[in-house]
Amino acid sequence: MNKFMKRGLILVAIGIGLNLIGYSIKRNAFDDYGWAMILGTLLFGIGFVSIFYSFVRKVEYKGIIEERAIEAEKKEQRENELNES
Image (cartoon, rainbow, N blue to C red):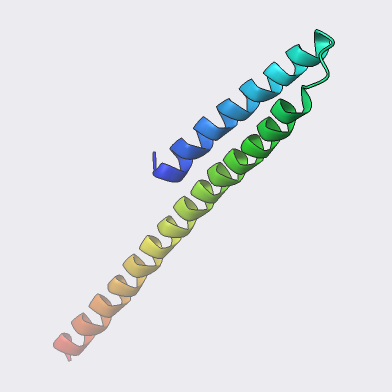
């Protein structure tokens, strides 16, 4: 698990927690619940984007590795053909 994934999961958890706190404050009829809900939503969004970015990077990295392996295999085949000639 890379740093973007860890950070994203932590931010999502904090965001959910702040939203729950905001709903609890609202249910108890206090007027000052907006800060918790706004901050919770922002942190949840940032966490979600971080997790998504982590997955995109992982897929891209695997694609690059596969591409390099294919190129190395083609290069090896060409060298073998030249050596056999």
